[in-house]
Image (cartoon, rainbow, N blue to C red; front, side, top):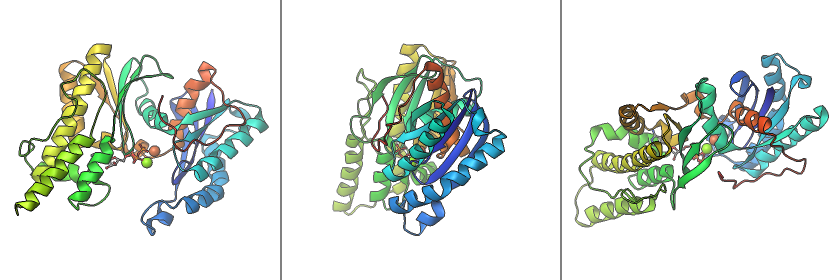
Length: 334
Ligand code: ATP
Ligand code: MG
Ligand code: FE
């Protein structure tokens, strides 16, 4: 089947045509980043208006590049959350019109599942069963895919997300935003054993994560140093903090791999681009004969092909949306 995907949850307006879930015929992404940059972040009002302007030309371009017409489509998949309500509604309205006009199924898709499925577009032969670690600014979830199209949540964070911890630590160190990539690049100059930060829940028999205690430990360390008039070695702190995060994330993945007996692990979310996380996981998994996969940078940003890919598996399973589909700005996994 040919699935049309539509994505408008944040500041990219995107449409894509994907064949059998994994073959990308087109993936048109119109970024609004230049409009938002001068305001220092995404302005929801501007985003909604830009989505309205861009959605039809982007859809037309996606069909043109794929060399298909509306009549060729099997279904239309659209992001309905999480994201900015105004943007989501633009994509949903477009998807409903097309589904109604063509009398084809409407497939409501969770944006975060889309990010996970970027892996299946990037690695065409990748098959379940596998374990997925989703680590971003808002999510830290460990998932088990017995087959593509469904998953089981093994564990998630009990408080802060991993990316959130990176961003908060970078903020108190006045390193800039987003903090993850900056800390990542600083780590090479530091000693990961310099400061003994806690590894929350590391020894407990759980798949859950917790990062707020680690964040507090970092803040306390900084306060203590300042009170004593001692200097803070930012590289040592960054390296020690990142080592703690990587230790915890790696341990959870290894536990899941062993207990679920899978031969593959996939990563999704912004923190998945952390160089130390990838290197240490890859090395540890290689020892267990387990492969590690992650999407290339260009598929890590918001795009509609990943939405169409999830849509294909839902389509095959007979999962359908109704015309009363609404945006769910706070939608979560599971
Ligand atoms: P969500 O998708 O959960 O709503 P988000 O949009 O903030 O949240 P992403 O865009 O996937 O998430 O990822 C952004 C996060 O990834 C930020 O917290 C950022 O600091 C972190 N990040 C990016 N690169 C790295 C890196 N190299 N190391 C660690 N963290 C990183
Ligand atoms: Mg985002
Ligand atoms: Fe996204």
